[in-house]
Image (tube, rainbow, N blue to C red):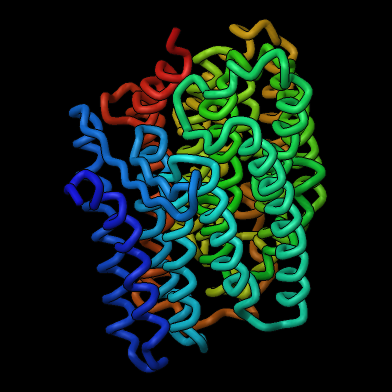
Length: 500
């Protein structure tokens, strides 16, 4: 096995092996468990850096293993995979630090962090999957790894949320498997390839390919929370804040959106998907989800549920940009894959800080909290402005390219949807900011956790991650023109998608 074949496996092992070891640790092994977590997260970052440098230099990193005749497990660290892997690795480190602080007095920490590491392993496997079979294997492993995290508290609400999550994701997996098996019967094992691999099947199999597309998109659309497949996401918010952050920014919903990108660009090919009449329905579904998610967010007083419905809306920008025929829409979709993750993880970190430090779970309870927790509130505000797409935040860059892509695709009405979305984002985020900064506190903080305070407004491990990610929300906007920015990486991937 060459080094270029081994590196994708090493990237998987950097979270898999620490996770398996953590399962074996007793609860009191706090320092060793934290050391294993941080070692795995840092090792993954180092490996990602090596892969990024190699891919930029033209190196190819691929590993394949024949599982059955005609079925191979393939890992390929291509540019699209590394965009997702880099996001996952960076945010995993932030979430690991946050989770260590958040769960320092909780039971079953070895179980939690073990599944936490397996979740990241499955996400990296999805990112590097070189074909639909490998994608499916890790897509289902992600369901199995995240379910115990949703169920972690063991409360009736957690059990109900976990049951709903499992029902939705297993149904989505069944649809995805049906589409993959049907497609395999037509072409064998299709590898992910820039420009797609199915055009030679037309016109003899046009109807079959259209039905298969629906099955595949529905299968990944469950995790991507496309309407009406989104019902599990608000219910899963009973999970601890680090899990919510992981679900929304790094793992589950992002895996579904990433699957849409792979299917459109590297299984069907965007031009062929357009010729089959598949892109316009996806645009309409994404726009409906964007508006519906925002309208539902407006109705939520529970802060985490408001953020959950915001995710339903925001992740669909990725599906929208993917379905807009043209490189500008593609750039908007891919860069939002990164930007949305950084913005949303900041919001969930801050929501967790409010809940864990002051016992605040509802929007109506946040009056004057900016005076008590100014740094957390500043981070929340930056991320909220990013979601609204206020310049110069990361969210502005995403929507700028999505709007340009809509005009280039001859769909100016999509631009109107994006404007409406920003107005709705403002309608459900600005009242929160008003309460945080301008309303006086209702009285003393009745549920303040004094053990969390320390020298800061809350524990340092709870405060530093959202401050870092909030700074990243600004940096990704201000430095979008840099040669090492996600925007530049997205441009190079989009250029490959539209090769003649």
